[in-house]
Image 1 (cartoon, one colour):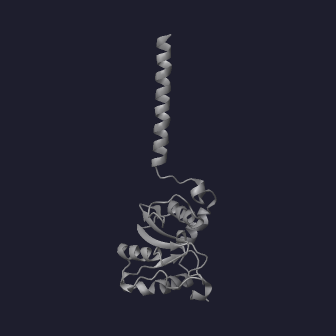
Image 2: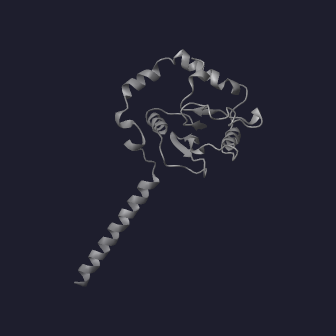
Image 3: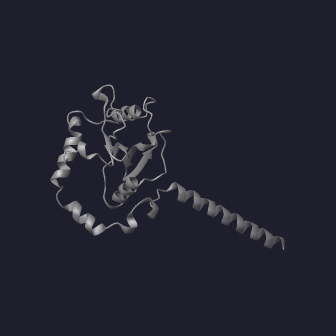
Length: 186
């Protein structure tokens, strides 16, 4: 009887250890589930067809226009940090969670939340879209600042809220949307 109890106890211990190990390994691996992306219904064939076709002229022109101030001033990690700190400045009283710093490294997306500057696990629809793209194509390592406002810059904000004291320290702030009157296409 003692032998049987020891065997059951030993089996339960091994099972518990295995479950803990699996849980630990599962949480430590990068996870890309259907809830974290749009992979489950992404139109893969249409996407590959589009990325093999030439970039539309309006898109190229808009990107060149938006980034033209940085043509002769390389965007560096230091400039990204200074611009991000300017956005997080106490003088700016808006919701700072609308602005995040992102890094794509080894084709994985990392987000730093504004309050703690630590990785965040909350996924916005735009982040899910980026994760979907990362699943299908390789994107070079990069870092960028992004606003999830409904149009950059919203009318109630100072249009220069993200500008550093010196342009030599400035990095671009990307937006998921742009007010039409600020576009070259208006």
